[in-house]
Length: 204
Image: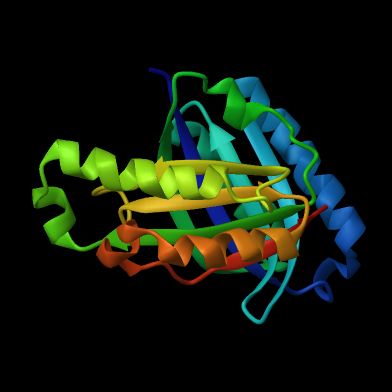
């Protein structure tokens, strides 16, 4: 199973420095991402947000931690006067088909948040974990509002402060909200102890 490294970075913008606007900043970040891709698999997706502490969200995918680090170092070297980082997350994506994460879905919005489970979850028998997880998945799949939603569960055990970083690319935030509300019925909710802060952005 191929592994891809994922990082999420949230920034407050200061565009007065260097007299740069959002469009120019986005273009220059894309140029830097293209150069970084010369080091190996690297994708940078940009989103604008209305959250008080995150004007810009970068969703990065790479074949190694070193490539993520290389991009981050260059980004801050060039734009340190324009970007004030407020949050960041590191995780690993494990999937039989990693190209699923690398595909550009063209969906307009990103929803991302960390998750931590009650330690008692990990003491359950595997069969019981599978039953509870299956119910959660079936509830999501059968929801009539579950249209144009791509989900990625990534893992952060002992490499960040949380256990998971979950990300969703969606076309409609209203439909996504309804799916998430319906999932509150799932038995799996009994073991969730952290799932915030939530970041939402529109694709640049």
